[in-house]
Length: 417
Image 1 (cartoon, rainbow, N blue to C red):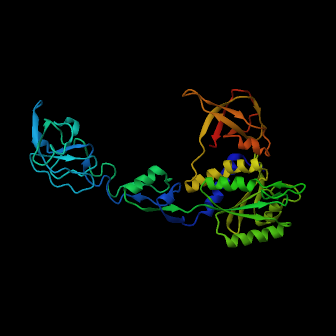
Image 2 (image 1 turned 90 degrees about the vertical axis):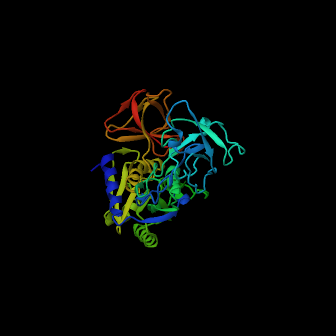
Image 3 (image 1 turned 180 degrees about the vertical axis):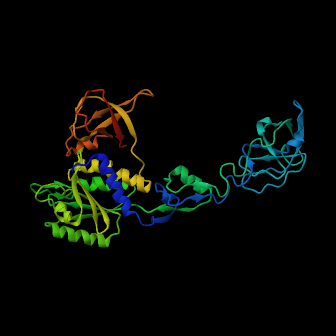
């Protein structure tokens, strides 16, 4: 029975979720190494930010009671020792004003900062600002003026970042400001990526008649790595299902992985070694109403989830984008979903009525806000057009039930970069 795209996407999610049923693995990394990773546990602030009351401006720390409230009066105060950032501030005596720099600790007794622009004189001068000199201020400063209070950003014990947060520069900057040097992150999802088929050879090797270079391993390995997965890559050249299965089990005994992923060997041909080797192990080989990427394989081997993608390069990439990448994002927090946008076709298109077609396209953002962008289809629907794939920046989705799309039809696109 043919599955819909949605049904198979749900099945892939359930499969991978079952493989992660054990307590979530994590590792602790220094902040710089944790960039792009996902938090494995809540992080609470070990202290407050700011950790002490400090000045928001270059100016003078004052007691507002010393300035009075009558407007228009210039109030002279004695200049006390200056307070630079990074030192412990001495207490402020009544009737005094302390020159204070931005970020410096507010002295005990002070309850406001008067910006230097409001002082007379309105600049710092070493000879005038020596202790014992005087400086004048307008009356009427309010308590709390130009003070960053302790904990006004975050208080000690508050939740700084919840588990599942993807760590970028902004989040890591917060952790650094809190004095946290390392954090627990989710272990990378590990994938055993198999390349199969006697007709494919590694790039750089000479081609014999009837052979092609292996594009799928590179396409899928890089796609997985960009999605935050750790890839264990191997090559199986097996002339029999029995040998294929034996080699696969040897790899599983050698590597602890969360998923086995293959490309090729799953269709209905006479020499489809993956299907012949794994059908008896309970792996399902079934059609999905999608073009390209119709043939799919799903199941498990020795308790390890297994997915099989078609052998044509575009079919493999589309299968990854539609089925595997969204599941990884849902279960591990990485990667983020592809940006999904409406766009208008620049030309006409056609699609099989019974299939969800995924075309490659070049998306152009709208010139004016509030309008839809435009997308030009690149290449045809065939699954071997690797050059067209490399020239694209979007996947164009044409849902099942739609056959003809005139130019100007609105479609949904997923941005690839």
